[in-house]
Image (cartoon, rainbow, N blue to C red; front, side):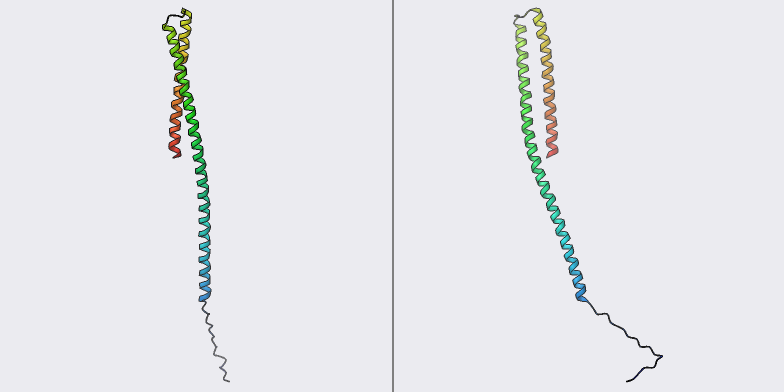
Length: 141
């Protein structure tokens, strides 16, 4: 055996073993993690989409019910207007037939004014109902 003199140092270099398998595993795990995160994100979006569809279907039912209710209310208001106009015409016919006394004619005129005011009020309410429903229809669509 040969020994080196003491004043010389022996340098040993250790090569790091290459770990391509370790790096590939690490990259593979990272990709799997990314796939899992994207999968979870897609599942969340799918859940939100299903929820939005249910809400949209619910809103369609509400809108349909509202349209039916609106039609009913509008029909009621038109019938009220017709009834008041018929009553107004009847009072007008009584006034022109000269079958009423002076006091009855005055009372009839007061009643006619009330009827005309009520007709105006109902027409205004009907117009507001139609305008608001029209605005709501545009907002929902």
